[in-house]
Image (cartoon, rainbow, N blue to C red; front, top):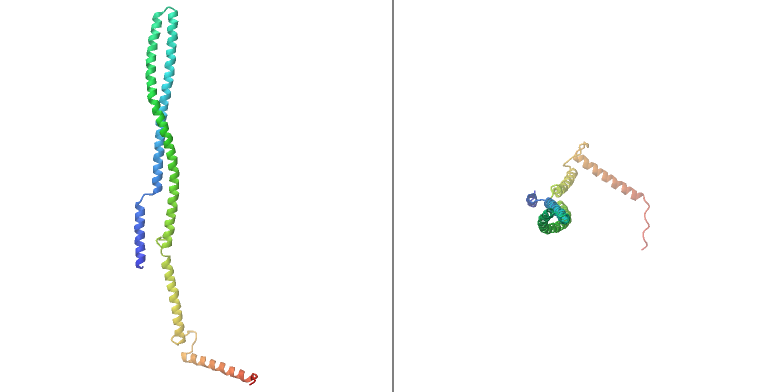
Length: 238
């Protein structure tokens, strides 16, 4: 292997080691998204609890107000009947109910801003999560495209183990073809020089050379006969 091949292998090993040590951005994005969803669910549960308390306070206030109205009616009826003792008891009950209503109203005044803040936070968090989800999908697509580009580049540059030996294989094949051609040319030259003989031809090298010479002489003789027998061409006028 050439020095460049060793450098490429070393670079590939270090690159893969670095990539392995890095966290997968897709996993990181999904984990962050899951945490945001959990946070939104917790916010919804807290908001539901606060809203439930708010509605409960409103119902209690309505009940107490109805009770206050009823004590006023009871006190008037008792006065009409000449029952000051009953009227006084109804009015005492009314005062207790009014004090209770004040406590409930103060509690409702405290919890209502909290509910409003939670509702606003829940809406903002939901919008932020939706935005993050869109950005996450875009980022995953971008990462997948970059990852594919890296793999293609590795294949083209020979850093990919699957295609890294292609150039070497092609070079070895070319060397083998050239070597085979050189061997064929060398064998042919040796045959022509008589250094190698055809095992199917029992003649010696001298006999084969004489046969070639005789065949050449026979061709020359036959050509001379053809020329002598042919009519002479007209000579061009002087």
